Length: 352
Image (tube, rainbow, N blue to C red):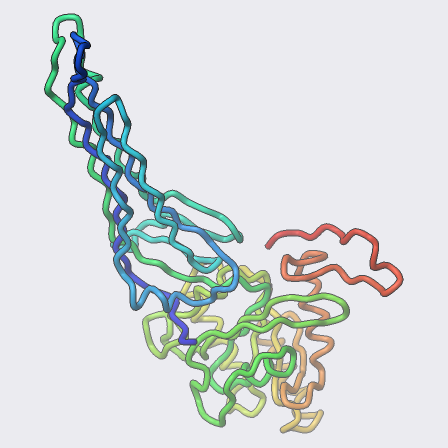
């Protein structure tokens, strides 16, 4: 499945049905009078966040969504039927943004959450509603209120507990493959990762979702490279794991480059807890690793975790630190039960 995190679509709610102009005409019954019913309400445009979706690719092939109009009124004071609402299903974490991208109209962050973006038009009045003591045979009616229409942007921000950041080829894909069942592409060249990927990490009876985004380069906040487009996917993360390549020319400089881009992007990314991981220690001796770790601490890192995404060395301590920044149980976890406790009710969990 192709990954798509932005899409522009057109939505239009249904117009109200017109009211009817009708008069009661029955044999042997005089003074029939007007009996035209009102029109039905048009359908609403509703967005619903559903599980099982992690891309907006469907909206690349279908960009126009129009709800049906209400039925017209009829004689014998019959009101037209209202049209069904049009429900548009989107992934959890989808934002609905105005066409000029200046306003967030809705933010669907919970499974099952719904928002009525456009309301259908009300049905028009039939001539029976215009009858008065002085206007016994009205012929006027209303055509029904037109529906609303709008162009909007859909932007998906993946929901994850922790996010991976770093320069290209820092070993992020190897790391997420090591700690989860993700099969991210790995290669000995920059920008191996072209789209974000998610993995579920199981560690010491706990679970959390880890997001990997394409590598950042200097000037990413101004549009250089591709990582800046996907930084939105880590805006909702509770903690960031910053991977620094020990085999690079200047690990401390690499760390500062990524920090500068996070600060330039904004959205509170620099305010999130960061765990600095000195990756690929299997390519260096212990003395060199200790020296680079000291340089990173001197450059502003609170604590450095020497790890190897390839061999798994040091990863347990890093994951322990991640758990300290997460609630006791995240929404992605299922409570653990022993075989002799299968009949017990599961414990409560906290939503993301």
